[in-house]
Image (cartoon, rainbow, N blue to C red; front, side):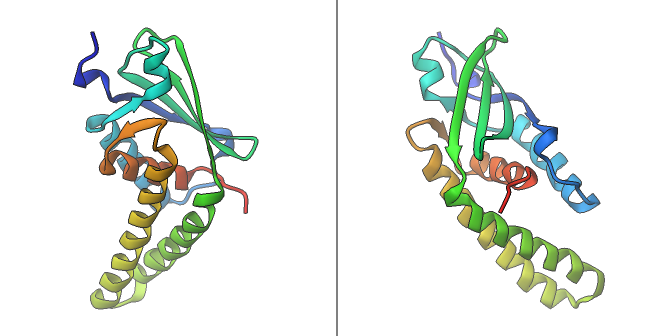
Length: 163
């Protein structure tokens, strides 16, 4: 019998072969997103559940043949399939997010608090837009909530997505 505690990610890994070289700020964001995601999330991969698998889930994020791949393992460690998502709808918002993050980190070093706040508000707005686009891409494949999708979007941004 499946319980709500089964509908979660228990562990998450990133395909290090597809990860760009990270600076300290990006590495910190990655660590926080991974920790927060595992601590509190809602994740129900619909096809895996329909095929008899049950969580909690181990998820491996990577880029395979230009697509985002969420490799799944079930509670028993068995392969529960892969969810593939086209990256086309996310590319632009990921690029925008990288650009605003770069501006934000530069501003932290030499800009007033008011300017930093303005850039941070724009950064959060772009991140929210990316999260909503990810939720749309996951619709019909994974039942999740906004906060889980938000943390997944952060991790997707860490992966190397070729322009």
